[in-house]
Length: 266
Image 1 (cartoon, rainbow, N blue to C red):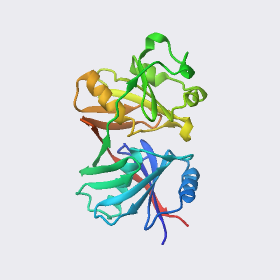
Image 2 (cartoon, helix red, strand yellow):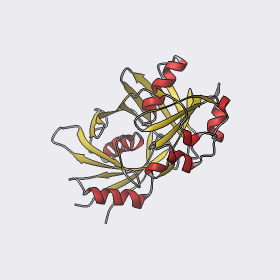
Image 3 (spheres, rainbow, N blue to C red):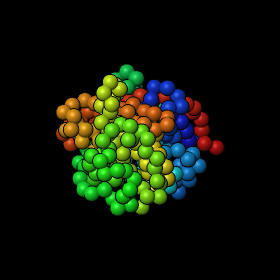
Image 4 (tube, rainbow, N blue to C red):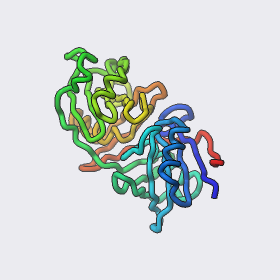
């Protein structure tokens, strides 16, 4: 059977913005080496592989960066739900469940918007990693810490996040899979907080849009700002908008997605 491949831009409502993801709809699993090779060939942040299960409305889902398999990926999950609806595999009204390395994840549909149900993660605050010493003036850093995936640095302003020029070697030397840089958004910007994500240790210099980062950034900023629902803006070159709603030990992460092209692997 031919393998369908769809290129989707996620967390955006227009092509060539947000974060691109490749989505393969499979009849049966591919070899790990084949999936990793395809992800490397595409060279984008993540490629998702979706397989059917014996349970209606539930699909297996795995994500690969150009270098490694990823435990949790937001934009490629959003893209996978979008592709399942666009290819009429599902009706696009009933929520879909994905079985993943991070447990079951759900995607629900509200018109063009897709909302993910992801696990919340608490920031363990601590000192700035030694490898990042000197990247910012002391007064620019509002907080720092870690999660199971990210080194996290909270800066004092949106401008500081926007103007940061990453030292990818220093970021890699932290040992974290990625660096999450975030700050409160400027007043009147239409967003509540901003972020950027750098992942040289997983083959992604700067991620254009990062759904999984909201698992920690959402609860953090909800507590700091006192807001139950927020708009996050990712300040990558491509730009992205995410709608974030923490709920206890879960985080709802909403966004749009658009198909750029679709075809089949030879």
